[in-house]
Length: 286
Image (cartoon, rainbow, N blue to C red; front, side, top):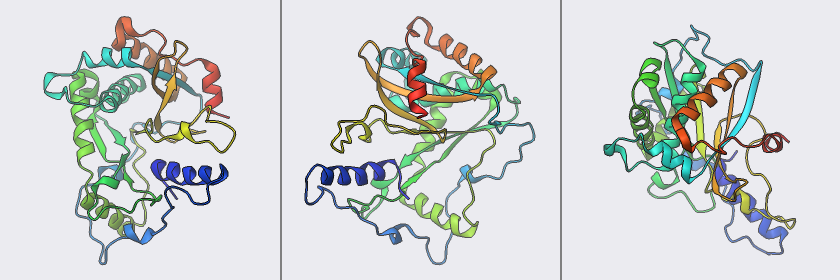
């Protein structure tokens, strides 16, 4: 019904009314016809996120024996990761380098077949891609999740720049034409689900304003999902008072141990306090 940006916008309107406003600052806009498929529909872009991939090596993770842990990444941890960024990719954002690192560490932890393909799907807000622009106040879904794809052997053995370049390239694929092509694909293929095999989805909601929502009882204590849908990057202040990014990771218990070890190796001496206390993990599940 809505994406993270639209959700925040709509809930902000409600919070303004609950706090006494007669009219919200931004009026909600329905207008779902804006993103309907074309007539006739035509797929004009490549959408690897919807590839039909057989699970030949058990790459789909079973919900049995799963463990969720949350990890904190502040300026110190991000700086440690940036040590591995090649000069040609120094323009990368914090989201991009963190996503590349998590993709690589997660793949190493899962130990899939070396010839398998792994997909990192990045949720991209496409509101700025349209001309004429999407109306202010539109709170429907205006996102895509293009897929960065790599062989397991390349992700695990090549430098971090390999994964980072793929992540950066995937984000640039999203254009107005790409979004129209997705809508047409939904009609032509009967609304297929995204590829589950070897897939990992992330979304940056650190600047969406969840924590500022106030319905008269104060600001939020926690703002994020209550079950595992994707790796949502949310804002968090650690026990030292440092502001950074909290990322929930959901893996089989044995893979989680390998993930933590790989992350520790990556961060080196800068790995203190990156594991979120258990009470915060419990809070995110309430």
